[in-house]
Each structure stands twice: as C-alpha cells, then as structure tokens.
Image (cartoon, rainbow, N blue to C red; front, side):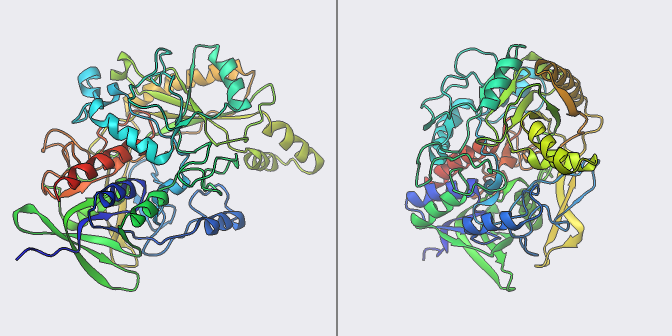
Amino acid sequence: MATQYDADVIVIGSGAIGSNAAHLLAQRGKSVIILETGEWIPRWKIVENFRSSPRKNNLNDPYPTFPWAMSSFDKDYIENTGNFHYVPYQLQLVGGTTWHWAAATWRFLPNDMKMKSLYGVSNDWPMEYSDLEPWYDLAEYNLGVAGSDTDDQSGHGGAAHPPRSKPYPVTAEGETYYFQRLKERIGAEGYNFIHEPNGRTNKPYDGRPACSGNNNCMPVCPIGAMYSGDVHARHAQDAGAKIITDATAYKLEKGEGGKIVAVHYRSSKGADVRLTAKAFIVAANGIETPKLLLLSDVANSNDMVGRHLMDHSGISLIFTADEPLWPGRGQVQQGAIFKWRDGDWRGQHSAIKHAPHNNVPNRDVAEMLIKQGVVGPELDEQIRHLSARWVVIESMFETLPRATNRVTLSTTKKDALGIPTLSFNYDLDGDEYVEKARDLCMEDYGTFVRAMGGKVINDKTGWQNHAHVMGTVMMGADSNTSVTNHEGRTWDHDNLFLSTTGLLPSSSVLNPTLAGIALGLRTADIISKEV
C-alpha cells in the first residue's frame, strides 16, 4: 500500500525565496504546503502603521511583532555575545523581510564564485556561474527587475558584465538629479558609477504599478511597485499551494535511512500539528533556517550548521555638498560607486561597494540641528538649506567566513511557544581583511568630500549592520565543511533541502537576495523531477 502524504513538498517560510520555490513546484503540478510563523498583513495596514508610528527610522516598527513571531528588533528575539551587536532586520509575516528591503538585485560575478581558486581566500562555490545564470534570468523576470544591459558591474568600465542570456525585463529608470551630479563630479576622480538593478518596476508589471517616487521603499512601498515576497506567496496559492499561517515549525522528524518524514509546527493557540511530505524545503532565512536544524538535531553531523555567519559590515559617510543636489526624489537607492569591486588585491583585503543613499534627509537634519540648539525661523531655514545638500554614502565590505561567527540557540531565553530564541556571536575586531579595506574606504571618503566641495558631518560611524545574512548553512563540495551540496540538498538527509541566503559560501559585496531566489528556483526544479 502506497504511503499517504500531506503534500509532495512542504516549504517552511513564505518569504521571497520560499514563495518563489513553492510557486514553481505548484506550477508543475506538485501539491505544496507553505508554513509561515506570522500572518497575512495587508499593505494598507502596514502603511497606516508607518504613518502613525513616531519611530520613523525603525524599519520594523510598522510590522507586527508577536511573542511567538517576533521581529528582529524585539529586545527578546536575539542575544548578542560577540563584540558587534548584530541585528538582522528580519520580519515574520507572509512575504518575509523583502517587505522592507531596498530591492537591490545584483548578480554575483563569476569571480565571486571562485574566491579560493583565484585569490586564495574565502570559498569556491560548488557550481559555475553558468549553472546559475538561467535561474538568475527566471528570478529577475519573476521580480520584474529594472536594470542596465550595458553596465560592467565589475567596475572596470569595460563591456557589459556579468554575462546574461536575456535582457533585464524592465529597462533602467532615469537617473535622479542627485545621482547625476554625484556621478559627474566624483566620477571625474576615476570612480565608476553603476546603475543598481532593482526589483522596483518603473512600468506596470505583473499586477504591480509603476514606481511613483514615494521614496518610502524602506520601511514599506505604499503602492506595491517594489517587489515583496507576498507577490509570489499569492502566485503560489493561485497555482494550488496551501499557505498555513501562525504555524511555527519547531521540529523536523527523522525516519529510516536518514529521511525526513515530517515537520511539526505549533500555533499561538497551542495546537501541535505533524505534517508529512516526500520532500522538505527550509526557506526560513539565514537565521531561522539554522535555528530549526539545531532544534531538530538534523543536517549537522559535521557541526557546520549556524557557523560562518557573514554580513556586508561597513561604515558610512555623511557630508554636505557645495551645491543643492535635492536628495529624496525617486527611489531610496539607485546605484553604486565601484573602484574596489574585483581584482587580484582581493586576496589581501575586502572588496568595497559605495552606495549613495537617496532618502529624504529632513528628519535627520532636523534632529541634528535641534541637538545643536537651533530653533525657530533659523531651524526652518537650516533644514531647507542642509537637506538640499545632504549626502549619505554607505559602504559595504566583503567579509570572510569565520567559524566562530555563528548563530546558536539561546540557553537562557524561550519565546511564547516555549521554543528557544537565538544567540549571535559576531566579531570584526582583529579582522585584517576588512580593516585594510576600511583604510582604503576612508581615503575614498576624503576624495568624495573634496570632489563635492563638501563639509563632513560624520565619517566615524563605526561598524554598521547590513542584515545580509550569508554562510550559516553554506553549500559546498565537501560534506565535511558544508551543510548542503550544490543543489541545496543537505548532506545528511537526501529529501531535506535548504533555500536561503545562508547557503552562500562567499559574500562579495552584493546584496544576496537575488542569488538566494535563483538558488531556490534551481532547487525547486530539481525537487520537481524527483517527487
């Protein structure tokens, strides 16, 4: 008698990666269940929450945080034991954390995937760029990515790179005046300005309207022009997938032959449910994925789960230019400044990506002036003057996988469901690879300020958190040093797959979400041929 399953595939996590994978599987006729710890929250409600919140700089504040589905800004969600206070900006609701990303959708360069072979540091990926390229294509078309087909994203100023088999689905938007002026004046100093591919459509696409320049991508796009994971959660549901909310997975059950036979989840009402499937995908981002594996004591025979946490830790520069630039019009981020993107020096120090921020600066300017005691008409005049000239450049550094930088289960805290919370150990002090890059970055900052006739407001920000979680369940070619193979299939359990940016074995300086979605689609394709 044939075994009866609750689904062909159970996907744990409804963020952009899990929902895209679930949609592909449902399209191919597989029965799919998606489990989500949080709830469906309508966009209008999030927008209203933002409008009424006094904490406009808190990206998580418009989103619900429940005792059983906490956002990462909740004081009880994470404990830090390292010298860096790491906060991953994670959200738990249908659609996941892409509700409040800047929608940067860069591809990793072929050289980024061969760091060990080419530069003697970090890791090689267990695949070639050509293996992932068609899935990058599909991911870009799923998200409606706007990009330039002519940019050399290596920063060398040559032919279009990396290689593509299709043009971007949406053409690049026009350059803001702010970006144009920075490009003209700083670019003259030998820096390449590259358009940032982004999941923010500038024409109607897949039911989404064109961007109208609200400049509110973070914490929420008010009209839904910017892609968020709920788009493919709905597509997956329309294709036949079942989404169960308020369902916190806390145990993967092992059976004979190393197979995973069931997942157990718990609701806020206290109900415990066991579901069976032929295959399981854990797509619960780069921190909750290792958490579930550790809770279940699975996929960790080599003690690699949770280790090698990487982020694009960096610093920032704030200065005022000698001319009005009018930041705050259009999207919050449009491009990158590349000088230290790729080269033989990567064996000695981090790659660097400088990203000019285009957020409306009035609030930050006002807070600074009020602290200085400026009031009355002078305050109003100074806000107008400085906000027009305000420049923020955020710099991200490539980090190396260090086994001691890791995610573990808390030994002291549990959530409302009785499930252990998370503990982070993330250190940067003494890391010569990034510290050498910081020195070069400061030299660049001096050039930027000089080129713009600027006055420095702050160039001593210290290490900053960018919430680009990588490495925690890294893939590789060796079962002794990685958690999965190139398919995202765990070495210990051939029907347990991981789809998360935590798979990435090297960090580069590129936002990892698009790579995570491409890998998730590739994994879903493999599973669809087996179940």
